[in-house]
Image (cartoon, rainbow, N blue to C red; front, side, top):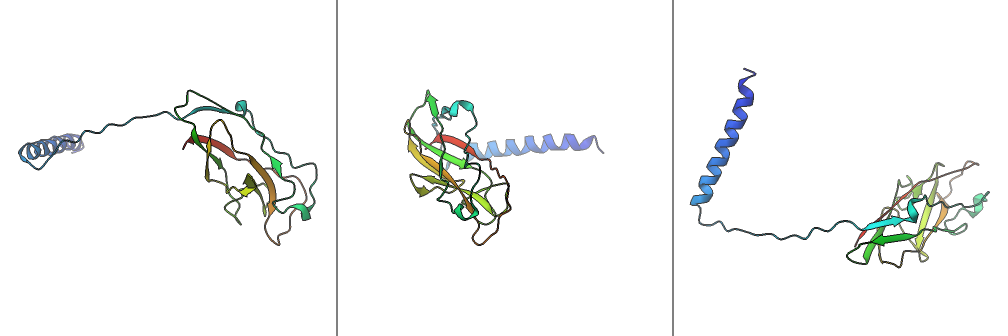
Amino acid sequence: MKNLKPLLIPLITLVFFSVCNSVRAADENIAMVNVKVTVIVPPSCIINNNNVIEVNFGESISVTDIDGKKNLQRLNYSLECKGITKNSMRLLMEGTATEFDSTLLATTQENLGIAFYNNGEPYPLNTWKSFIYPNILTIDAAPLKKKDASLKLGHFSATALIRIDYD
């Protein structure tokens, strides 16, 4: 019985295709459609010379200064694109969001996230932002705690990924 099962599947498939082909040949209500598509490759870009972009908020931050505005630091990065077909691009700051606010990057410290800004305006995490290359986005980051939450003293860290694509 086990030997018959593999033989039945190809026979059913062959019968199905031959029935479909005979129906198509007899059906006058079928028209041929030609589809033309241009496939483009993603931009060939190098972000920050393939080096990690580090943001340091300083040696110590007062808990009262963690409001998403104070301790604002610029993400200093570079972008070099070669062989691109258009300059309209977009950037995604991708990462794990905090449990208390989906727009903030989660840190190793509970109730603490990183807020991002583009030209002073909030730039939500995991959101594409358009720009025209070679003018890259100005992105700032600042720590922000959950309202009325207490924080543990000590170090924290967070990791995000920057993606570049055509817009």
